[in-house]
Image (cartoon, rainbow, N blue to C red; front, side, top):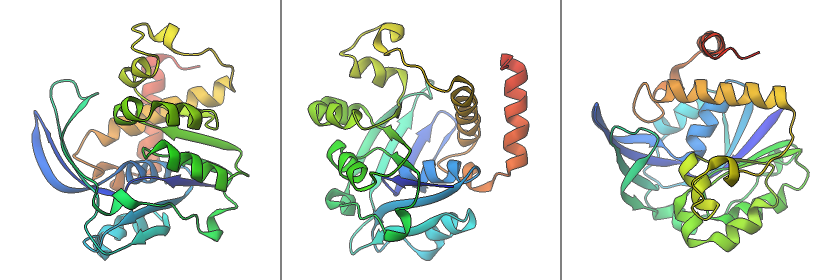
Length: 243
């Protein structure tokens, strides 16, 4: 079983009340790929510049992540800088330098097309839709977006959401997508999924997030074991009484 993730591979500068760090390996596709690699085979589609070295690729190689879909072109890799206040759920953007990502056109390698699962990370909704059309044989498609696309490309985003099975966004983005509806229960549409599988997946997502915030960037996600993940899942399960 494998999953294809399409999105940004970037360098991040991050500051928080506990300190700051620069030139971190980041990007939506990177975070997703590293977290998912503890559960399944991951294949990445993205673009980087010639400042993205073999050492940077080593982080993917170490987790046995397939990077044949990452194009390396002339120019600088996408860069993002931001900071967090006491609310770690919301990042404040200080700068965004799209660089080679500005003209990113996803190309799905032939070797990826037998994957049954697809995750459309945080990129322009039209690009997400393009990839979804190309990967028309997948069993399940997940997607991500952010306030930038909700505010600037709502029509395109709403079209793309029609071909996404699972949307992963935070509460602020949910309210924004629902035209600033303050009540999350009214903002969300009721839908029936495989309850037990979805519940476990959400818990594992929270577990991976709890590891990610222990260090800046993707550093902690690069150095985990499945035993550590399952131990924290069990602790989370006991604390929350997950059946």
